Length: 109
Image (tube, rainbow, N blue to C red):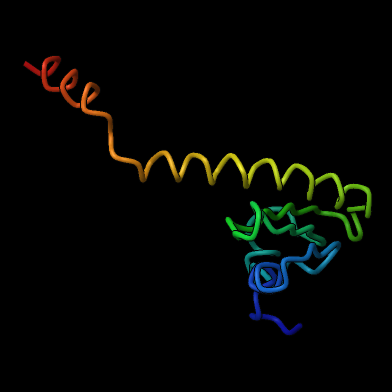
C-alpha cells in the first residue's frame, strides 16, 4: 500500500484485519504531527452477518505494538459492536409507535 490509499478502505473492502500497519497510511501527516507520533495500528472490520457496519482502528506510539492474539480479540469485540450498531440503526429506522407519539403530544402541552 502507498501513502494515501487509506488502510480502513482496504480493511473494509477485504473484510480482514490488518495488524501493525503504518498509521500514515490512514492519517497521512497527522500520524506524526498531532501529538505523540503514532507508529502502528490494528484495524478490524465491523461486520454483522454479511453487512459491513464500519472499521475499528486502534493506534499505538510503539512499532509492532499489537499481537495476533489482540487482533483476534478485537475481531470478536468488533463482531459484538457491529451487531449492536446494526440493532440501533434498525430501531432508528422503525416508525415510532403511535402510543409514544401521542404521549409526546400530550407532554408538550
